[in-house]
Image (cartoon, rainbow, N blue to C red; front, top):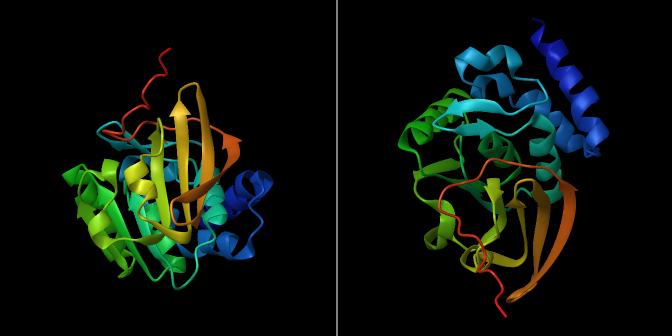
Length: 217
């Protein structure tokens, strides 16, 4: 397999058609080597338009989803970022390439260890991978300019929204299969939030995120 040709095809055939036109994001996809974050048995599929298994029921999101969410967050060099759901560490690596620092939470110790190893091998030093349940965020290191929830959740908890600074952005895939939407939520003022629905998709659920209470008459 010609890896660089496969990477080019991923960007031009999958990602650019998904309205990912920010050149700085597209450039990152060439410099952060996705195949180095994919488990060895699936490395030949690193650039395929599909989710890849990480073990323990977890997956890497499809490349076009990762790239579109990264673009929507508009990460800046001074941003302090929280990621919930580290997985292999690939999204943390993309965020870190644009941010000042990333705190990434992974509830499964084996995946947290794998992500740390992947990030260290890639020479990325501005990510802290914490073995922790991210369902309530990580207030101890907040507030954050950017929060990326790397998986599906039924609703964004208020406790996590409160960890966004004014002007901060959060991206998540929200809802329950088969109806889920990628959303960008912006903190427009203290306790005030604006939500934009970006696109429909489905993502495996992250652990321990509670569904919103059902409405009762």
